[in-house]
Each structure stands twice: as structure tokens, then as C-alpha cells.
Image 1 (cartoon, protein in one colour):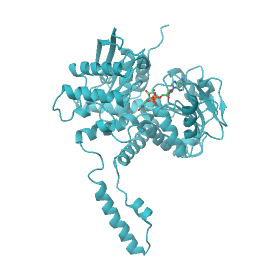
Image 2 (cartoon, helix red, strand yellow):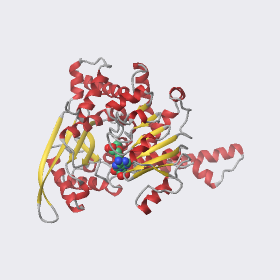
Image 3 (cartoon, helix red, strand yellow):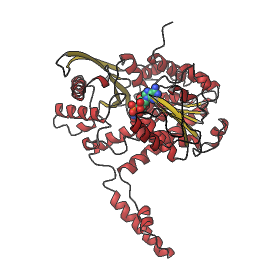
Length: 470
Ligand code: NAD
């Protein structure tokens, strides 16, 4: 039997969820299909003078809202099907967190580690040129962001190439997000996905009845957590989770994994890894035989934040966590999903829990269109108003606040404060909507199906507003 592709897997979950919605079959088909795919192949000159043909794709899954939005990955095995699957997940993710975009994803088939910075720059700029030529990029058309193998550096090259091809376009910087700050980026984007994951987990852990049904006490504080992958998502998630009072009992990276049931100090582990080149042999911790073994450690919450397809039918029966928060995209196979659901483990799906990145990318796009930093207009005004309130309180109570208390009470919000606040509101509201959908559908429905149903319902509303679907 041929292996089921990633796209088939996504569509299979879609079909399962769709069967719980009662929407018209043609409308469901319109929501499911990929609306447009562009493929390119272009020659690139390597630093040694040789020529190479590079292939790339950009899929726009859903045009129900524009622009479309999604990352660009540089990976040796990327292909059209994978990009289409990831674009579909972006449509559902944006719908769940009320980000008014359709989903998209791009990919270039290269192993970025085998190319110099100047070669990567030539590839990124040429790919952007192709996107511009085919109308697959623009503030109102399609807005890329980083993904596997790309970073703010590539986003700066994309913004620069786009701007130079569209001279005088006032909103040009809004053509791509997660740019460096000086190129129109936003404060708080780097840590957004990890911080969003923390807000989501904290909200879930505050649900007493849900936690009780999982055999856990209410609250994130004291929960034992294992994190796989200490990159952008995993590191920041671990950082905020630990600040929230949970205990990091296991950490896994490419080279190996470590465990300590009394807790691991994240910053000390990171410093040890920097100094020795490895997580292993961290003082007081136990080395695990295989890095994948970390997923099976005794813990309450597992955060896979490295790669796809980590939790499979093979290891799912041995996973001890009660909650799995999918920091990575697609870390759990559908077979593993079924096993975990049967075993009463709650999987908090990627399309919700790692949506912090696209949420803050949306804020960056808004900032670029507004041409003003969030908080610039009102921060000082608020501080003056709060200051008058503090003085009035002092006058009424006869108590004098210290300088530090006064500063704290009268602080106005800067850009990072507002970004965090918007992200928190988004993650909390979205979880409440998923919980409500799950409650409506019944307990046998898992979190992933509930999240898909919510997304389908929201996209269906946009299409119904067109007046062509029943
Ligand atoms: P990253 O490259 O910054 O981090 C990934 C980390 O995982 C690296 O430190 C890497 O060494 C480690 N890793 C690789 N193989 C491993 C293995 N076998 N075991 C343990 N660790 C391993 O990437 P990222 O941006 O943190 O993305 C991680 C995942 O999260 C991806 O699936 C990505 O699609 C998803 N994601 C990222 C964002 C974002 O904003 N960065 C948003 C949503 C989803």
C-alpha cells in the first residue's frame, strides 16, 4: 500500500471534521481544495562558478480572505504536495485565531546549510522576483514569513527585492513579516510562538473540570514538562512555561536528551550546550540513550517543538504525558492521534497552540500598513492620565506610593506590551471557542477535530457571505 502523503493526512482530518458540520458538499469542497499553486525553476550561480537549477513552489490554499499568509521553507525534500498541505493548515490556523488571511506556504528545495549566505541571498531574491512576476506576493495578495530553514534575514532580502521592483509603493514593507526590527519588524515577533503556546497552555490548565478529567490538578504551576527541540519555538515556550511555575523535567535536542525529575534550569542548560556543544552531561541530569526517549519520560505535559512525525503508532502507547501541546507543525501522526485519544491523552493541536507566530505577524502587517509603531501615540498620554489617578488616590487615602510603585501603577503600554496583550487575548479567546465547539460536538471528539470544525465553520461563513453557496 502506498504511504499516505502529508496532504492526504490533512485532507483526511478535514473530511472527518467536515462530517460533523452539516455544510453543503460543494461548499466543503471549495474550503478543502488548494486555490492556486505556483512552481518555479531557475538557474543559480554557486560561489565556485558552477550553475545549478533550483526548484520552488508557493501554494495559496484559500482566497476566502486576502492576503494569503504563510512561511517559506528551505528544505532538501520539500515538494508541491507538502507545501499545499502546509498552506491548508495555515488557512485553518488563521481562521481559528481570527487572523483575517487565507492560508499559503512556500518552499525552495535546497539544504540551506550547504549554501553560503551570498548564494542564499541570490536564491531568495530570484524566488521573490518570480513571486512578484506572477502576482504571488504583495501586502494585499500574499504575505510570506519564515519557516524551516529561513529567518528574518531572508525576510529582509524579500522585502528589499519587492520594494525595489515596486518603486513608490507606500505599503511595500507589508509584503512579508518577521522582518528585522529596522526593516519594519515588530517587537515581540521572535518569541511570539513560544509565548502564545504558554498563554494557550496556561488557559487550558486553568480549566478545573478538564484537568480533573485528565487526572491533573488545576493550574500550570508545578506541572512536570518535557520539551523536544530548543529552537525558536521550544526555547521560548520552555522559558515562559518555567516562569509560569512549571518544572522542566526533560529537554531534548538533536544530539541527545537529558532528564532530572527535580527540574532543569533552562538558562544553565543553554549555557552548558553553548560551552560544550551538547545538552548531554549537564551536571545533575541523566543522559537518555536516544533523544527520542525524552518523549516517553514521566511528565504531565509534553511539548514537541522540533519536527513533524515524532509521535507515531510505535511510541504513542508509551507516552506518559496527559497533555501534548504541539509546538511543531504535524508532530503527531493520525495513527498516533487515535491511540492517544483512546488512552485519554489530550493533544492540543498545532493549528491552535503554535498560532502565536502568525498572530503577531498579523500585528506586524497592521503596523506596516499604519506606518506607526504601536503605542507611539498613546503611551505618554496614558502615563500622564494614570499618574493623575495615582495622585488622586494618594490625596484620598493619605498614603504615599514609592517611586517604583508610582512608575509601575502609571506605566503606559509600549509596542511589546501591546503585542503580548493582543496575543494573550487571541490565544485565550481561540481556546474558549475550541472548547465550546468540543462541548457542542460531544466528548468523543478530540481537540484536533474540534479545532478543524471551528475553522471550517468560520471559513464557511465567509463563503456564505458571497451569496453563491447554500
Ligand atoms: P528551529 O530551527 O528554530 O528549532 C528547531 C529545533 O529542533 C532546533 O534547535 C533543532 O536542533 C532541534 N531538533 C532538530 N531535530 C531534532 C530532534 N530529532 N530531536 C530534538 N530536537 C531536534 O525551528 P522553529 O522555528 O523553532 O520551528 C520548530 C517547529 O515549530 C517546526 O515544526 C515549525 O514548522 C513549527 N513552527 C514554528 C513557528 C515559528 O514562529 N518559528 C510557528 C509555528 C510553527
